[in-house]
Image (cartoon, rainbow, N blue to C red; front, side):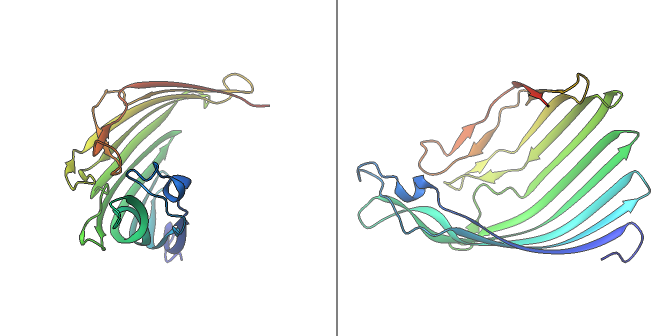
Length: 231
């Protein structure tokens, strides 16, 4: 719906599912500590979203979205009466949030920024949802260095404090990546070079309950090169 020039309002609704993995359905360790569950059902998700998009002249565009997500039949590991761990459909969760994005395009220079605030709850246990930050954000700039053939990009991502499976807080983190990308600089060849986590930040992500640790340190500074040949 377009009530004004450069203004759009969207109402979105969707459903999705996640099928249980073979590990969740069939794995057991000889029934020493885990047993399989071949009756697992898919996790099911419904989401509703209202989006307001607004253009500001020729070079700037922003959006604000309000969303709600409901998840049923969440797959969790539980302890059975036989003192064995088993994946079962026992969880429900909901999340509500607001997301704001801003995109700019000026003389080939692309810039973007976004922030997100979210409240999420494990309805089954009436606690905050594990590994679900309230605050997150991103920012990035891409600059054409050589006549639309060589691009230099800097992007950064912030993830706020989250809970691990033991309901202990995991520290927030800020990670920056640098990317160099060629397009038709050499005929039929695309080259991408990345330095991920260029500042070598130390950060952790929560993991599932079968790990000895509740969170695992992620990669430090990492170099990647990708060469693509196009016919």
